Figure 1: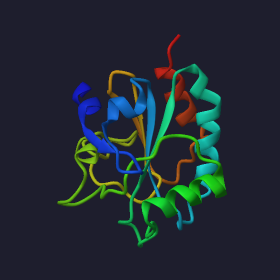
Figure 2: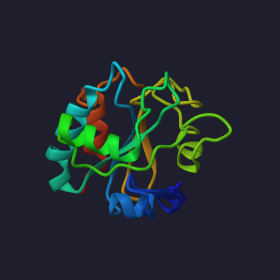
Figure 3: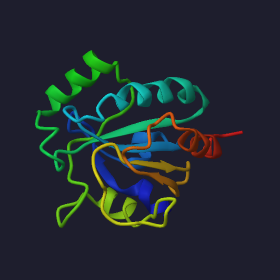
Figure 4: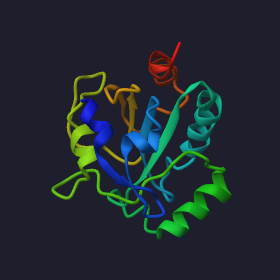
Length: 164
């Protein structure tokens, strides 16, 4: 799955890049996010992971998505302002994309092929579904939205992909 790093994406401000360039070739936690969701407070834990593990060669990547209950309706500027002002987000964010269905972004077409711990692959269930990627772009773990970013199993998956 190393081709995952070559998937074209755009930053929240519209700059074309690839997933590999966005992560800086580092292990990552890719999460579809939304500003008006009951799970939105997970941004606090995502930023805490960025602050704790960033210096060790890790990054969180937020992927805004409006497919679940219209919970990310804002413009790129509104999303950036909300994330910065409300949660102090410092990790990279992509443009708003679809994660399911015929219009799913190529990144999510690849990510959703990976099964979670219960063996279920397929569509993203809701906002804040999490994928842990190794530095070479292999998806090593998938966690459903209700699993918090600071859950022991998420932290263990992140630790497993960090440089020694």
